Length: 268
Image (tube, rainbow, N blue to C red; front, side, top):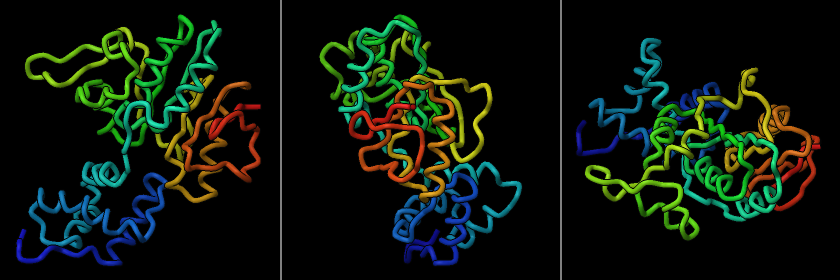
């Protein structure tokens, strides 16, 4: 690719990408996201030695390039996450778990690279009943592969409560020095699955006692937000909990939920 001038993502090319994202994931990219989209796709232009976004979009339109189309969805899906993000939720969950003895199922419905479900796993191991399991799901196969590996840089454990790293994780040695991996006992209770929340959920997904749907609704229009939440709470048992992001709202959705804490709802 020539280095004298950088390619420009034109309005027509951006509109095509907006449409692609809506069709593939339901996510609406606002016009303000154009610089972010251009920056992320620049990696692919360089990797493929293409000189313009127009050339790249021609490649995307090729029906034989489905792998590249999936890669675009991965690149444009925001996957920012970290352990114990919005810690008040995990503190609330720990109190809710106190004294419960029945088996529990929890769903991390936009789990990204696994930090949220593994945080939930540690909370359940410390405060939950003897029998529990977690499902983590995401649209992106790339981040799910990282989640399944369960290996993270050691400095990302700085938010863990004292003693939890030692109790639930293994320190890396050799080529994995400076990293940690969640132990087999915890990993065995956490499974991952590729799911698109904009589409009907598979029947075999079952029902849950707790669903985390945090910091994903902000990427959808109001109609799609309500449809996603309605779809998920059909799989939430009466009395179960739904967690959403602190910057999100369910106001006006008219769903069988009641607020029990900040961005925490009980299924009626």
